[in-house]
Each structure stands twice: as C-alpha cells, then as structure tokens.
Image (cartoon, rainbow, N blue to C red; front, top):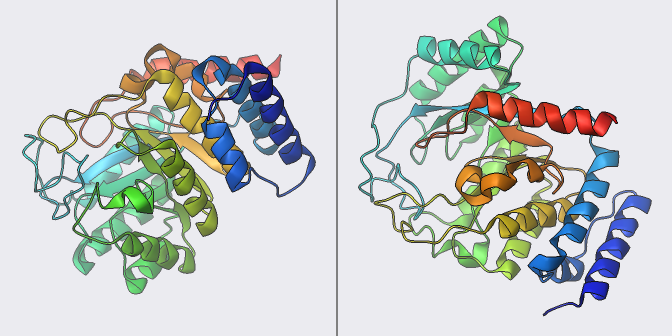
Length: 335
C-alpha cells in the first residue's frame, strides 16, 4: 500500500483528530495498518500527529529517565536470537552471578546522582531462585530508604509468590518484554512459548506491580507484525512500553541483521503512540546506532521517557548529551 502525499496528510490528520477529541480512543487496527504504510517522504506528518497526541496526555517537562543495572550476566538458557547473554551464543561478554545487595545499592546511589528517576535491576536467565529474589528484595528496600528512585526490576519469569514478595519489598515496576509479535516469535526464540511471557506479565500485574513491557524493533519482522505487537500490548493494558532497536551483536544469530533506518525507527515510535495514546513510551537500547543524528526526534515521535547510561552489554551515549537533549526539548515546549 502506498499513499499519495495528500492522502497521507489527510489520513494522519483524521486519525489524530479522532484520538484528540474522543477520550479513550486510539488508532484502530485498520488505521494502524494504514499508518504503517505511510512512506518515508511523509514521515513529518506522522511525527506531527504523534506529537499532538502525546502533548495533552503527558505533562510538559515530564520526560522521565530510567537506568538499568546488569545485576546477573550471561549463561542464559534461552536462545533469543538477538541476545548477547544467551548461553547458545559466543559473544565474549562478562559472565557473573547475582551481584550483592551492597553492590546494587551503590549503583543505585550513583545513578540517582546523574539524574535517573527510575532504577531497574536486570538479570539474565529464565527465572531467579527464591534466594536470589530475597537479595533483590533486600536491595530494593535499601534503595528506597536511601534514594528517591522508583525501584524496578526485570528478572525473567515469575511465580505468584515471587511477584508478591517483590511488590511487598517496595518495587513498583516489573519489566518483561514480549520482544516481537507472536507470529514472529518462533524466529526469535524456541526455548519458551510466547504464552509464558504473557503469563508472567499477568502474574506481575495481579501482584500489584506496574507492568512495563515492550519490544525490540528490527528483528526481521514486517510492518504488519509491528502493528500486531502493538495491539497485543494494548490487549494487556500495559502502562509503560519500552522500545528497543536491534543493535546486532557479533556472535548472536542476528549478527548480520541490518540496522533499521532512522526514519523507520521514528515511524515505529509514532505508530506505538497512535495505538497507545495514554501509555508511557520510553526509548531504550539500540537508539544510538539506529537513530544516529535523529535521536532528539524521539520526543516529536511520541516518546516521553528515555533510558540513560549503559545498557546490559553495550555502552550508552554520553550522559550529559542525553540530559541536555531532554532539557532542550523541555525548553522548546515552554515557549
């Protein structure tokens, strides 16, 4: 499907106005497919629409920042095709067991000093054992005592008891990505079922944790599958969507996958905003190689959150550059 310039502009405007003037509305499945088909030359119309949708629902000067700690690295039993920490790949990353409570707290204190508002402890592996969950809970309780950070974690699959204990420790958000559309999942992971990821999201939500679930774009999925993923997340009613872009790691199955273009990456963000008008959208790993000089455009495309600092196994951008980018955007909105 290829839309003319005039058709693209009028279609984006029509869908944007529908969302703005009808509380609770979002792009329909058919509308999302139309938006996904908009060509690169009309990307400005799409971004402008996404920005209009974001503005009324997200407060100005409210770009939140997250940072993560790789609290347990490597030797994961899962065969996720993109992951440097999979035991099925040979990437040469550092491998170590769960960090101590003291080490995690020290890292959180450092991250608060540089401007983070959310701090997430992330571990490799299918699931933590109960003793490891205890360490995470103890670290979270101390972090909340000593900082103003929101405590988050991403620990793989959860049991109901583990989810309850995490919530009782003061952890607010539980992060667990679907990664891609269900129709594409068997091309990315074969060691667990898509339904297991959905079950963990439901278990976390039932325990009172705010669920954070998103994806990695650029795994070889089609635009139709990107739309499919967006609606899967909408069906789960997740309050926060982290968006990553594939940064191909040597030694993984996807090491030769080409990067998304900056316009495709921005289009992915805008598409998620049209499908999720009221949801927090945070841009995470892979933005530097995918977006290149267009990183500041993510807020125009509908993002209202940014991960700062390093990622799990790759380096992030200079922290001061990111904080200045956020400040510049906030100053622009104030005028």
